[in-house]
Length: 267
Image (cartoon, rainbow, N blue to C red; front, side):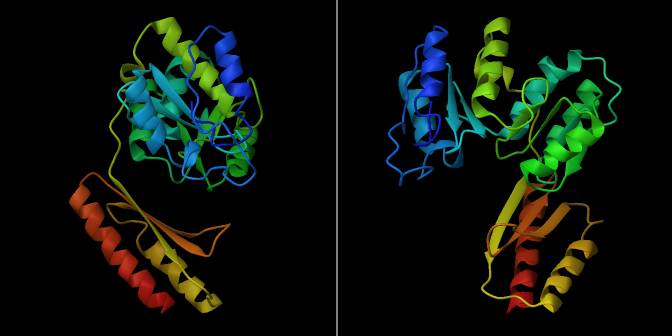
């Protein structure tokens, strides 16, 4: 497990060791400055290599404050929050008899592959919220949902916790893999992702008129055959562009065109 040189550096390895697992920890020496630095849930490159090197069954990457989880399967593949939600939907939520209108809540960033899997394979509806785990949690409370989260690794299992908890999510994944006696790569093989292109466009200053023009550009492309989302970051001076669709070349071309239009608008 990759502790991101953060809050989980001691407790996460100890919990899994006490449960009888052989644990190999990396990035578990926080010094107050190296938190999340090219490691943990924000960068799983070193964990991918370590899982393959150790021939591990699974790898868990936590972020600095421990509320996010990204998984690496036994083949060294990154498993994002969408795939974790899909796993929980199949093995935990699908067993519940619920009258909730939207049993699962994710954000506008979640892959269409997840949405289709939930509806077509499990008969579960998906509700999308604005980006941010607080928005997911609010929608979950509103619709009495059992499961929610973000592609970035925030996972909320409301039966156990009312907020994201990376260690809890890792424990539930381990429970599922252990009880079904399957490899992590096979158990996460649930659906194929749609191609997604994400572009971050930075700016220094921006006028209200330009903001409106960019929002209008987003509205203009809502009915495009590819899913388009243009939004302003809530934490950084960035415009975030997402284009998603069935055909990679078309998605790439659409993203390139929109990026060019956005850059012209901001000068």
